[in-house]
Each structure stands twice: as C-alpha cells, then as structure tokens.
Amino acid sequence: MSRVLVIGCGGVAQVAIQKCCQVDEVFTELCIASRTVSKCEALKEKLAGKTKTVITTAKVDADNKDEVVALIKAYKPDLVMNIALPYQDLTIMDACLEAGVNYMDTANYEPEDTDDPTWRAIYEKRCEEKGFSAYFDYSWQWAYRERFEKAGLTALLGCGFDPGVTQAYCAYAQKHEFDTIDTIDILDCNGGDHGYKFATNFNPEVNLREVSAPGSYIENGRWVEIPAMSIKREYDFDGVGRKDMYLLHHEEIESLNENIPGVKKIRFFMTFGQSYLDHMRCLEDVGMLSTSPIMFEGKEIVPIKFLKALLPDPASLGPRTVGKTNIGCIFTGKKNGEEKTYYIYNICDHQECYKELGSQAISYTTGVPAMCGALMLLTGQWNKPGVYTVEEFDPDPFLAALDRYGLPKKESHAPVLVD
Image 1 (cartoon, rainbow, N blue to C red):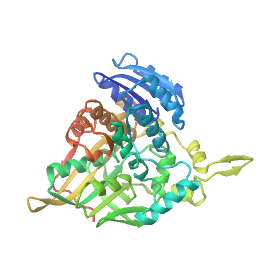
Image 2 (image 1 turned 180 degrees about the vertical axis):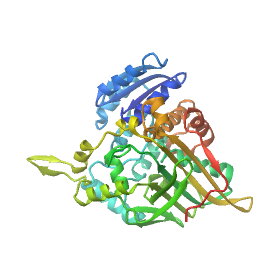
Image 3 (image 1 turned 60 degrees about the vertical axis):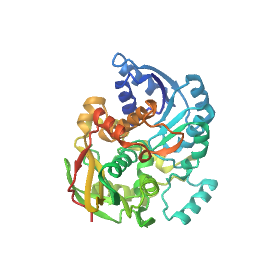
Image 4 (image 1 turned 90 degrees about the horizontal axis):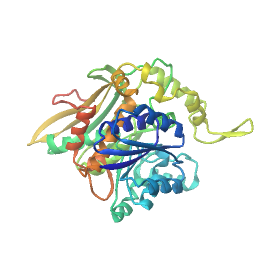
C-alpha cells in the first residue's frame, strides 16, 4: 500500500521501524537509511521472517541535501520519516520539497553550531522579540509553510510523545472535554532506573542542551523565562510514585500557545533525580556542555560531543532499565459553564518495552507515536498541504492507534493539580 523512507537508525528509529513492520498491510515497503549502514542491516536481519514489509537499506549523510534528494528520487517513497537528529530537519525538509514527498519528524529544529553568526543574529532577534532563549523553536520550520502548501505536500512536525502525543492530548481535551481551556500542565515523569551514576535516556547532546537551558512558560499569552531548574514541584504519579519535577522550556508550549485559543497558562515539567542534576551541573560548570569547539592536543573537538562519546549509548539502556514512565497533561477550564479539571496520560513499563522490542521506554514512547503519525499520513486521515504540529489534526484516530499499538491513554476527571 505504501513505501516509506526512514532516515535514522538509533534507538527511537529502531522502535518506529519495528512498529511499522507490525502494520505491514500499510507499511508494505520500507527503506532504512543512515550514515552507519551496518545498523540498518542489523535491524533488517532482526526483522527477517517477522513481517511482510519489504525492507531495504541505504547509506546517506542526512546533512547533505543532494545525497538525500538522490536517495528519495531513487527510492520514490510516499513519506520520509526523519528520525535522525534535529540538526538535520531543515536539510531533509529541503530535500523533500525538491523531490516532492511528504515529510515528518519527531523533534523541532535546532542548530548544531550555536556560534554560527548568521544563525546567531536571527536567534538573538527572536530572544528579544519573543522573550525566551532556548536554542530550539518552531520558527525555522514554520517558515516552510507556504512552500509545502504550494507544493501540495504535508510536513508533520514533532510527532513523538512530547512533543507529539501531548499535543494530541490537548486537541482531544479541547474537542471532547472543554468548551474553553484555561491552563495546561504537561508532566513528563521517568521513574526508570538504569543503574548508571549518570546517563541520558536519549541523545546526550539534545538532552543536556534541553535540560540546562533556562526554563520558560506561557502566562497570559506572554513568555516568562526563569533560571534553569529554579521552579521545582513534587507530584505523586500514578504507577510511579512521588517524584521531584522541574519546569523546563519545551517546544510544544510554543505551538499550543498558537493553536489552543484562550489558554492563560501553559507549563512543562520533567522529573529528575538529585544525582542526575548534580552530575549535569558539575559538567556544565567545567564546560563539558559547551557546543563551541576547542583545541585539544592539536585537534579541534566539541566538548559536548566528546562527552557523548563517554556516556552510555541510550539505545543500550533497555536490558538494565526497570520502572515506568508516566507522561500526560492536566487541564483546567470550563464545560457548559461549569469549572472542571481533566488529566489524560500514559503509563509505560521499561521492561515490557524491552521484552517486546529490545528498547527502553523513552525510545518506545517516541518511536510508537512516530509510527502512528506516519500511519495517519499514509492512510489519508491527516492530509492537508502545509506544515503542521500534531494538535492541528483530528486527535481521535491518532489516539485510537496509540491505544492499539502500545501506548493506551488513561484518564482522571479529578486530578491533583500542580500549584
């Protein structure tokens, strides 16, 4: 029925690909492409005899637009699933426009080189105008809206869990639970334990940039920025227990502020243990989180890339991670003139994910929504030219797919609110 090109073969991509192969009546042909083609070949071999999906592999440098265009034109997919690095989003979007194919990713664009003077000038102007200083924002990809619309192509941005499912939860709440929404609190709890003193659950470069950035939230339509990790709350998570969580900047806040009218406050919280924070602060203090190149023994290195090489590969954490995640959204607002509250969330077990696909729950909770988003595009349930985030589409078929393929929703109409 469809042919899909997946760019990337890391932990999230491997989950998404295996899930695509469970829906082989839709994903009839699939090409796995990466710089490291041996990873693609190993996954193809793992899936041999377990799916009717016809799998091929290819080597591609996702930073090279011409290479990506050539691969797309040779393979002729119906959709490109970008599950590589967010640094590569714009290159792959450019390639999809040139080759005439629909696009999706799991995280919004951010630059690899934050010292690039051209990017820096635009970034500093945005900081001044909008009021938040995180390196990642939607403006770079939203700038492609008219080009994708004129080409008759769809680009789906940020279809992981957060961003992604959290935005679908917001659209679902808006459609079914509220006439007006006043506040949205997005809570991301990882209650997993991998046994290491310090490791990140997804790409260390992206993870540590995100966590060490100043926090920010929307209040009355305006950004409020705070020092990193300066707002802390404790919450009792279903299936996990009481955890400390901290307010972070996160990309879906920006799009929800654009697409959910009338919301007075939008915040994002993520749980962290004290050991993680102590290690991160120490690494930041000595410069190991820097993206600026330095000279070391006659060679130029980027400190955070060197740190990434020292840390455990997130894809290797599956067999040793125990515990559960709990990710969802708490809302306040009105229905039929009455005040109401609502909480929609998912609980995911690390070891159950490992038993099914050989991954930990962080990769699983991102990879499954990526497959479900692709499913929406390929079956025409989400189909309009332009560049969109998840909350701009009908949430019902997407959440039904998540229920079916491993991330069922849970609901509470009397949740404890975050003060």
